Length: 526
Image 1 (cartoon, rainbow, N blue to C red):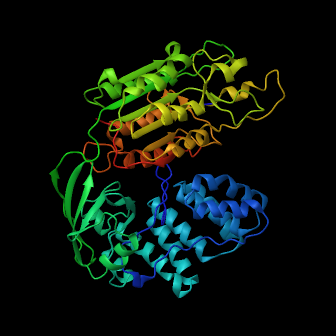
Image 2 (cartoon, rainbow, N blue to C red):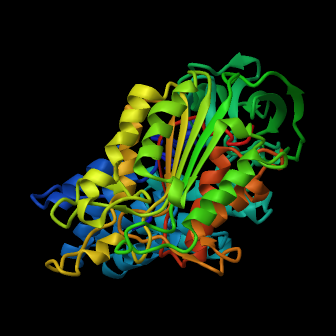
Image 3 (tube, rainbow, N blue to C red):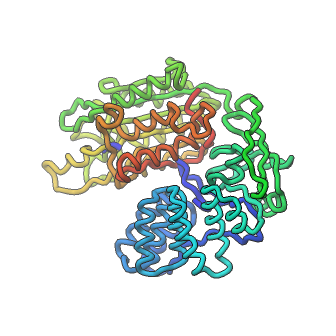
């Protein structure tokens, strides 16, 4: 194997508190999907995890609920909303349409409208939101009016948007608390913040002269934004302080380019290290070879040390490919070589190859398969997944760590267990195992090529020969994910780019996952 209106999954799972950016008089709160708490465990566990913002963890429970109770519109509604939070819009639409076929309810129309809005299909979104608005009680109409307004703003109709907002001020951002202020985790197209030049990943630090570090989001929405037609803000973007003027009264809105003052990069004065591992060929012929895993690793290594790429010092980047990627060498790199990194530094660990349990009977014990792994003795010759956690806890002192795994490949080892043993399906659970690394502490981002029910793809159609995930990873780092055109690619930009690009390239057959608590403004480039 090789592998949201109120909350958003950012790579790593980040639980957020939604911010609409306009006055509390709108009484705008997200309509929660409804459920009936019965003895049916998936219908309890799934919604509970969803309400905690743990969308990836909620997914299998909600999928099971929808499968076991297919005639219950609530099961499809919850699953559809969960896909919406994961930005898997096509799958969300399919489930929400099932819910609507059973019972036409305003919450179905709201979520469907949001999906089509995110896909840029504004006219269809407007049609659905208007249908939901007609079905909604007065206490819930604000949700529909807000998204209708955002649709009209995206279409350039400020007048219609202003009517729907009834004169209320709007920023058009979604935020979460950050130690330095308020982090923008999502943007609405053509809304005032977008027109003023702000971007996803920016950290608002000051609003009309008032510092935002430690400010409660509710206070920001209910006390600072209302009755403010125009705001001068300061925000951090890639270690630079920017200033911008945001005109929040739609009758006054126009685009204003932010002025930039360069300062020292806050909170990062260290060095950047990387261990890059790729295994295509295995010493044991019973382990299926991969075509491009080692090539993927080499391509990332070359970008990291290039003057036109990551600009890492070659002495701080270790490449282990094919024959050099032995269990001993991997352990030495993670347990020994990376001990040189200090707290102020940043570390990248990349692995492309197979991940597998030692047998069908031990799916919970997962190993990264090194070059010299013995098929019959994976547990004693492979590299245990929990040793990655051990390295992070005991040996790697850097407070910023990015783990990237393309380790759940089609044609993987799991299928080979069928030969000579009882037939049993081996689930690719590498993603969940790696996501557990985020329990070590703050500052760790884990990005995997696919989720636990998917297999990663590779082929010549991606750059002449790459894994689809690493192909888009490289393209994103080279600039395609630089949404704000500042010549830097942040994790806050890279993660949504990867999610959209990989899902589109594989027709939703492969969905990258992210987990952890990290700074979305962090960049892999030096």
